[in-house]
Length: 222
Ligand code: OGA
Ligand code: MN
Image (cartoon, rainbow, N blue to C red):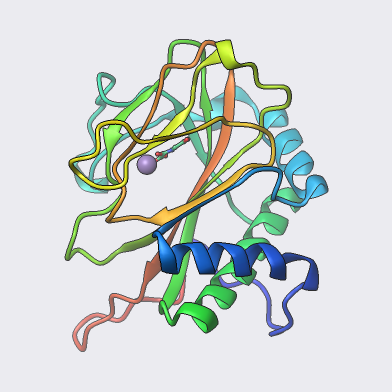
């Protein structure tokens, strides 16, 4: 979970066309696929940060609630590392995400409150079977954002994201994990999977949450 970073309310003008397109597509279809969309220097810095992190900072991705973490290697096989504001690239990413959050809140009245982000590294043979990022009524994850950091991705590498329009959809829309592609979708509505990759595959996954405070329990603005 991350603190909102910017104290200023100014949005960086460069991001407005992208955030506008994403908002419009979220409103019409619930998802948005944007090739070559992340600012190139931000994407490059994130990739360098990811590569430079020692292997041991990654830990085997785990599924489930924090209290009962179990390894489900038959469902998911990748390594993740949470993104924090300790690195410059991490700070820049969180600032970009904060701008996106402000924009979507203003344009779509989504009430997004906080976010979490991790890097993911899928090694050859890794995959993530069909799943949803949030369950209806639990109200925590509202929007999912995935960004890809792979230069010169080849068709034979596989590793596509497949986004299904609804629970009945078996065909889905395939997204090639090319450098700079930004995918956004409503977390509860779109089952998706990562097909087995045949090369190292780097991505960022983030989720926006709403405020789940009640009168008895107050969420910190994290
Ligand atoms: C996830 C996820 C998709 C991807 O981490 O929940 O679905 O393409 N990632 O990396
Ligand atoms: Mn997912």
